[in-house]
Length: 242
Ligand code: UDP
Picture 1 (cartoon, protein in one colour):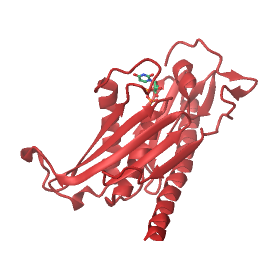
Picture 2 (cartoon, helix red, strand yellow):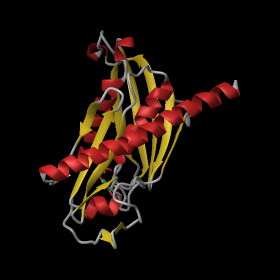
Picture 3 (cartoon, rainbow, N blue to C red):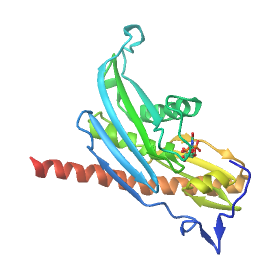
Picture 4 (tube, helix red, strand yellow):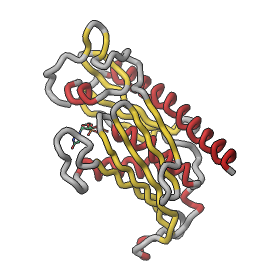
């Protein structure tokens, strides 16, 4: 979180006119890429994220294979044109961290035991970034994995909350992320009630944390509803097309 240099709440409203507990507009679609096993595209506010799944397929190198289950690896990448200043192509510390947290979250819900000795690769490409990309990426990656047909115990859903101008708000956009006091991304598997990601950048009191955490979970549950609807609609489309 940067030093505060910008007023983020004016006349009780956020800069984009949202209420404190309001999500940005979200659109999601699955089955958007032909050469993957599963894919998804999510627009969330000004974020645009594409996810594609390859595998399960034989894992290489052989000595790293797990005879009990598949190894799921996520690769998060920000396109050079996804941010205001050109992003230097290739992995950096941030993208390695985000790749790991997405891999861990998805590995908790995918039934990897069904595919021993294999690897499942989930690629996430951030085409346009506007804060909260790790949450958008988790949502897109989870949809793409479900679309690939890999059995899952639940979907993973995510949403961030945070603190701006002293107020706890849902789903920070870029200015709020840059100039706000705190960002709290959360990922859950709602049916199982598990927390699969909990990070915090900034400071909150205990009361503020409880409020922000509950707000993020409620946001993630709304997103979960959209994910389920997107997958169900795609199955209806598939049946109608047959
Ligand atoms: N960002 C950027 N350049 C970078 C990394 C991030 O402009 O190299 C922006 C981008 O809009 C991103 C936001 O900063 O969404 C917040 O980044 P953070 O590391 O907090 O992760 P995120 O909120 O995207 O999960």
